[in-house]
Amino acid sequence: MKLDIVKTMIAVAVSCLIAYGFYTLNMDDHKELLTIGSLIFLIPTLIVTIGVRFNLPRTTSVIKTVSALFFGLGVMSNLVFSLVSFKNPALYIMVCGILFLIYTLIAYSVSKAQQ
Image (cartoon, rainbow, N blue to C red):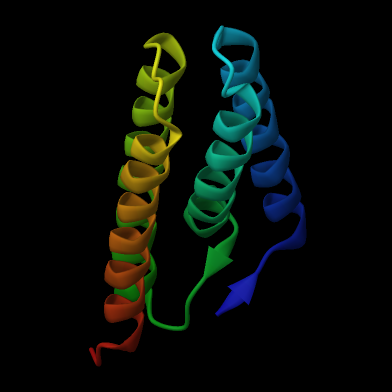
């Protein structure tokens, strides 16, 4: 696995801007939770999507595709949570946590699979 520093910094900056957009969009009491949660979800998925290259080309393409899909899914779920008023922060933590753990499991399984 090789990490491209410039693309990684761009991925972190884009994720921070998206999280700030969610912060400004949300009118609830849970603005900080939504911002931190979206950062925790979006930064790793976008870094793996654009900033990481694996040794095997098939592994790289599958993991980048999975990461891009989960990045889009994370953006959509955080957008829904910022537009809809949610009273229970545990629901947000559970949804984003389960999505992130599924993403981690799939990416780990693909990276460990032999070609």
